Image (cartoon, rainbow, N blue to C red; front, side, top):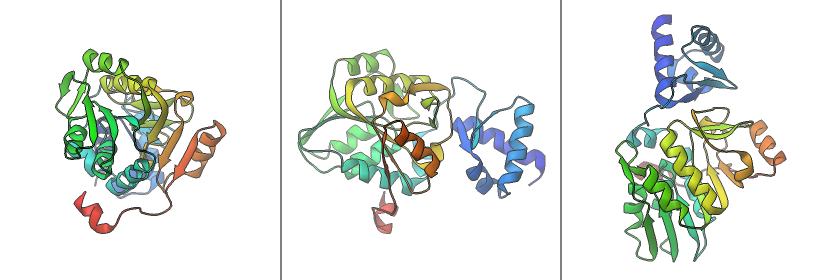
Length: 265
């Protein structure tokens, strides 16, 4: 791949995802991490992206959401394991909120059929839980986002403000140690803000690729996050910082699901 082609591809990936890490770009472009860092420096000097710790973020605002089927295939194994661990934190009679992330959808797939109430803006989550008769599902309603199969906008936000839940499970695009968690789409960020404010306890579900990144729209500062569930590829320096901020951390050290379950998911 020529340098110009690689630079164009890097810019496209950053704009498409909102943020991306050096390690992932190195794998996708099949060059060393040092080469990627030089490429990012050049692209930043040309105003085509912004550098951050460990990667880069898009300079574009109000970005379009990545379609659900594309997000579903990204770091699939990590998301499945994080989802299964998150389900372990749900108890009979809980009231919970699930966002429209692919990790929340995996949670819905692994959820046991117990007596709980689930508040969600995700059509995929609602349809998955509809197969489990003991689970009461409340959908927010709102404006349908076709990319994420979810409801957003004032109606969804208003619905969420009417409820109180024990636990909220949310994911995001960026996990930044100083600036908190963020989303590439401001409408999804506003919905997640409402979910977080409605909950007694907030769980952030994030695979390693989100750490060190900052997306366009702020979702919440660390004072609003109580527990982080992540995978074994997340740098320990990030997790140590979270513990210093009194955030509980669960880092998975092994796969919780079998290879056959990973393929089926």
